[in-house]
Length: 110
Length: 146
Image 1 (cartoon, rainbow over the protein chains, first blue to last red):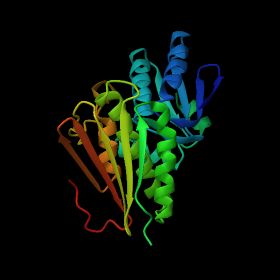
Image 2: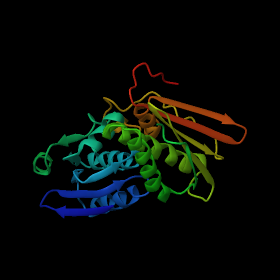
Image 3: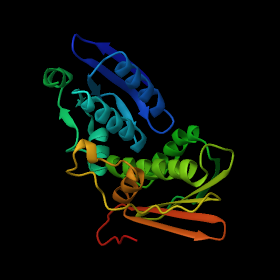
Image 4: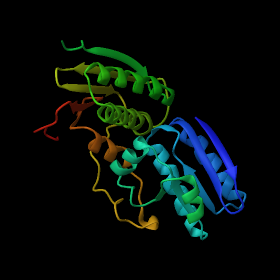
């Protein structure tokens, strides 16, 4: 899995590319944790290039969302492809995250 | 004609997930499963294998996990046999839907995904062995859950 991170003025956008499973989720967790340590409170997770997403990735997303909300921040999900949408639905998390069709819309929302 | 059964001896390491998913996809595609059906099988197998490694064996090791594919005319049966601790693949009632962020409990997410991805999930503990069977029907009309 590759991680592309782009920092805007108020928001950091993180785009994992490839497979987000139990083997690779720690990489995403470490990147998101570093952004929080650096003071980022608003993060957009762009799921447009995800080839595979399992519960390990969802756990990282939920944990990050919880942490950000404690400090008045937010995690928004942008551009989930059909596979990512299906996993969110199966896990019953599709209504828990703020999901946006485009990265721009997600950035504007947080 | 049905594809012959295949058996793979794997070890309880998470780097096995990618080859496992590839095998699942090959078997599902050979049966003519749709893309969503093949993906559901990949997802459930990934979650099952992860549970065996992390909960059954308590982490990565060289402990054995035997995976069998038994394709039928209208279904794919994937079974796992391991020697780890007993674990129940059936999920607890889901607290996720409609919960606030603070109330979210992500424990058991993998089991929930397995249950919702497949048409039949059967788990048995016999002696020191765990037997887990996942089944996906091509045309799931009347398919039962266990």
